[in-house]
Amino acid sequence: MSEPLIHVENLTKIFTSGLIGGFEIRAVDDVTFDIKKGEIVSLVGESGSGKTTIGKLILRLITPTSGRILFKGENILEFDKKRLKKYYYKHVQAVFQDPFASFNPVYPIDRAFDLVFNSFLPKVGPGERDELIDNALEQVGLNPDEIRGKYPHQLSGGQLQRILIARALLVEPELLIADEAVSMLDASTRIDILNLLGEVRDKLGTSVLFVTHDLALGYYISDKTIIMYRGTIVEMGDTEKVFKNALHPYTRMLLESVPDLNVKWEFRKSIEPEKEEEGVYQIQGCRYAPRCPLVKDVCWREKPKLVEVEKDHWVACHLHGGE
Ligand SMILES: Nc1ncnc2c1ncn2[C@@H]1O[C@H](COP(=O)(O)OP(=O)(O)O)[C@@H](O)[C@H]1O
Ligand SMILES: [Mg+2]
Image (cartoon, rainbow, N blue to C red; front, side):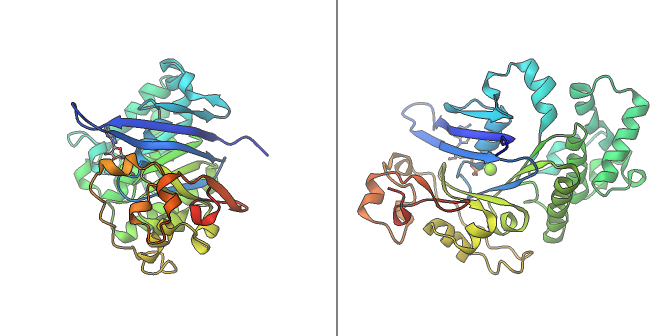
């Protein structure tokens, strides 16, 4: 089998809440998964499950407490600043939730591209820059004549998010991390942007880590789905298998709150995140035990292991061989 593009291994990130007497938040707890070349992987879970922290760790914006992140077999934690800038960030780019916050309102949107040219493509001259920007805008379905020179307030959220994707594509990245990148857009624009990410993958072979609290979006877009709960992976695998044969009680609960997965543009009501509770992070066993309708004694005592229950389908649950 070929080497994955990204291999995350036993990744753990512990934060401490508050200053004095704070408790440990195991935001990411012993997480292992792969992203293959050209694969769209969605990372799904309710608010506070550790999704953004994983994205930030892969982007090296924060340092893990333990574990490894391999990019094409190389441990990115060993990259110095220069190698991150000159090499890694040419291959791994990100798009975030709020497109309006990513632009300076007093400048035309063209300015947003300067950052990428100055940081990663300094040798490209002004004329060539213009050409590359036009090409990138066309690639994401925008007409450069209608977009260039405009100010952020003259454009819609969907157009701005397309521009940010175009900017990320300038360096021809191999991985695009999209963290709640469509959450602020209206439903029809969401689908357009999801389809655009699919096209980018199909045409350019870009892998996508699609981070979302919305299970239906993950189903719509991804080849592989990772379901997170409180820092741990509870279920993972081929998207069709995870959705059609969901085994973990948490995945099933999420699925039940999706109105109709066949009507992919209808979205479930978002689940209210639980209040942060110290107790959850002190449970020796399964973090989902306090909410699980099928909880057994062993669930409180032992952390279930992630086991492969069928090909490309993994579950961490004592009801399914997780002992
Ligand atoms: N810088 C930080 N300091 C302390 N706690 C943090 C920090 N960043 C995230 N957390 C905590 O880590 C947990 C996971 O957060 P996050 O990764 O943002 O989840 P998600 O993206 O799934 O909503 C949450 O409990 C959050 O409060
Ligand atoms: Mg998040």
